[in-house]
Image 1 (cartoon, helix red, strand yellow):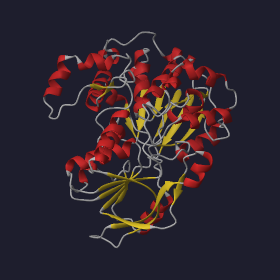
Image 2: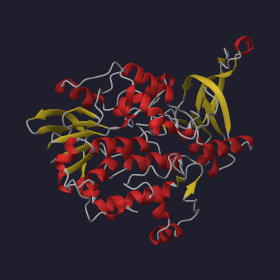
Image 3: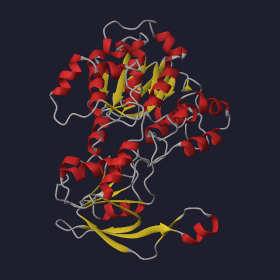
Image 4: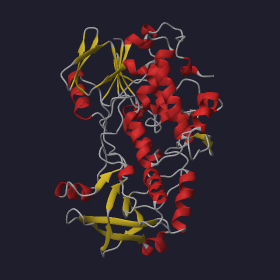
Length: 442
């Protein structure tokens, strides 16, 4: 095999489409992923939160052409499929013509069928990697070994759920308590009883979307958002200037990886809301369908099945002394704890910022003597090459791609860099395959 892509999420998916479009033979590509089907985790995440539209604009799709989603939305096939669904949502919403999740996923299914991606799919988890004379061998947790001339680590942060300290302690003591992470393997939105009172920890886009979805099933239930910051609005989780030369030229010219990490961390806007989600959430708060409390959670207790989770919280307010002295808005945590009870608690606290890949990447770093920046992330060249024949995408590429590396736009930028490498040039025929028409829908 010529190309082994480890990770079949949006990044690995899009790179596969790009390699095929460059003329790399399907027989030369395999996609390794722990899930049975392409985009299975993505579909799970978006379904659990109740997302209706993506935060990314339509041009950031998984195919080749930027306007592929606009073309699909006008097709008779999609109009027929859309007409069979109830509660039809608009195909695109402002700003930036953001596509509906249904349209995005329909396009993804077309790509899977047209590229025969399922035939390239290999279910499994990588355990270790070594260099061979002709490339690399990758051993799976099952003991099977794959050999490939080139390897791409398209790993996301999905295995690194962020659990606050109080939640870790509580779950260890009460493993069967109704407390879950929204992106955890055991959480299902449809399994939340419509009469349950729910506390959502967090106030970012996942928490807001889930809160609105739960409120729609029963307007009499109590749903409370708990967070340590107020609602923040941003079109994207980093400025659009990071998609082009406006900001990237200066970033590319910065030689220091420590400074690059500081720039990336400063530019990202975690916990923020797209304008439509902020609008809908604010309306629901004003109507009393939801509540939002600024608070710090000290601990949680649970007496067993049939009882409610009891949270001890300390509310947060404006530190008036600091505000009057400096004009700075700084939250102050109350010294008095208050009880808050709920039938279910759902953490919407995102992912840990640690380097993805866990023990597998750590073993590869040691075995292959891979260079690292002080933050532990890869030092790669302009083609995202960590070592000859070994490439990275997603969070692992942040120090070159920039703050958008984790997003769909980052997938497209990373894939462009990789397909311009000499390794792709050696394995590509230089022509677009004739069969997968949906890869380059005009």
